[in-house]
Length: 133
Image (tube, rainbow, N blue to C red):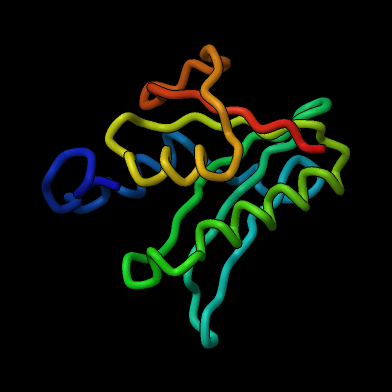
């Protein structure tokens, strides 16, 4: 993300500092879940859900560059939606940045629609929601 957002390689300690600033340690039961995608035994991607009363927040969606364009993002979204339903959520929300054009297109293709801001994350520029039927 550092390369994409800042157009430069990550500096030593920068990724760790960002993870400290925006932790993911709540992506474990009962507050959430971290889904891992594997292809031929290797980690290919991930997606996290934070469970809120009645809905779930999708976060940390990532597919390794060499696995992109092969349907992995769609598989992760389907698994996240299934997990959210199983946890009793009636909708999924997410926020993302403007420069993540491919991610925004993926969400739109899978029924996510832009909504007004529901969070104040410093990097959030677009907010999406999908009702789970």
